[in-house]
Length: 247
Image (cartoon, rainbow, N blue to C red):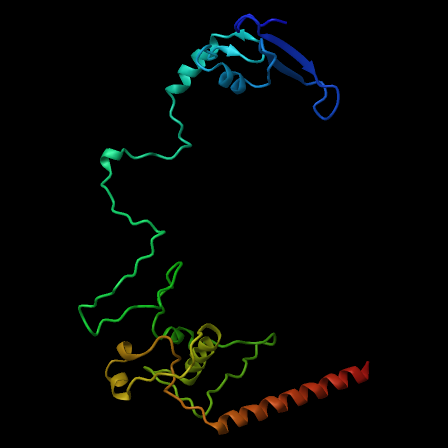
């Protein structure tokens, strides 16, 4: 069928799909006078170029639809908020940039010899500051069992001594336990001079270390701990053998 909305010689054809998931759907095909076929409006517009204005041409019906030009004018006045805001180039100060593909050496010149470069910067959210002597808030709190009997408190080893304003042994144990579970650096205790700690404990104390004086682990301490571990493993083995024998 000849299409009157296009130049003379153009034909419009409707083909019904016979099979597949889209069976029954109608395909619109336009054929040029030379026999070339077009299935979409963009293909048709590229072929005709500026010779024919297809703004009001309805590809599905093959007719001129004046509502299309009204719709286009109406949409031109609307702002697309889904697009990012583009700054006016006349309002942006020019920025000097160097292409990243050219790797150039950089020389660091220090004006102060004693200046240090911080290499331990952490990315992500900043860590919450720790309150000094927060362990004292847990003093006089005791854990109890189902029979409302208090558990026996842990005691510090002989080579550890509590340090701090009125810090009792129970509070020092909590600080050591926290350091073992949360801190990654070695636990060595407070290394500041005793005179400085007595002068101003809040200034010279290290919050990353437990509230115990600086300690030194000897080979004798390590050997004693190994013996305790071996004894505990032996008792566990005997208990497991006894349970398996009863079953």
